[in-house]
Length: 243
Image 1 (cartoon, rainbow, N blue to C red):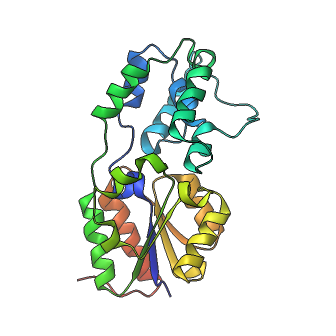
Image 2: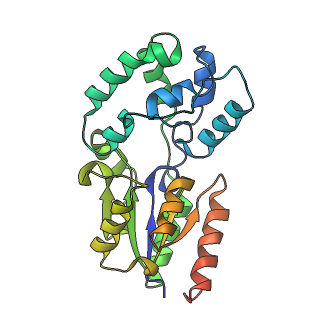
């Protein structure tokens, strides 16, 4: 029986991250997908919008070539694992930008974009977490995140009231979709994987959770649909309906 629901933060508790990055990329004259490639090392990284950019790349012969062998772990991954700090990350991407973007990155313009695209909170998800707690379920949070962002994102919603356990990639030195971080989350929750449902907006992370033995729900563009799918999984696994 399911005893626990584990949520992602970015794109699930928060509204989607980096909304408008495709438009910003175009406004700066970068090839489609090149900014995602530079920043994240992965054109599929940014949830729903990243998938849309990836699809556009596949159908556009003039867009950036994003396939081929990757010889180094992306800087963003190292940042999310706490291996490098934010200053080192920006130094690295500034150095790599001309080769990937075709010209230097305008960090001032990127900073302005980031300040105008800060995510909000999916309050319907926060209310769902509280409902699940009232139904006797345990709740946890598993997030790929950055140490320097911690004070800000933790202040945007009542994290300590909502989650028994918070596993932050930048504090544990591993990240989704690595199997080890799912195992660590289950260990800290003191559960077996088959007792948990995991909710994430990244399909790779969802697939990894399933491979680890967890139930999983992909959180897409419609939060209400994802919450309905979560309820359906809980019902199928014997959890009584909510109020």
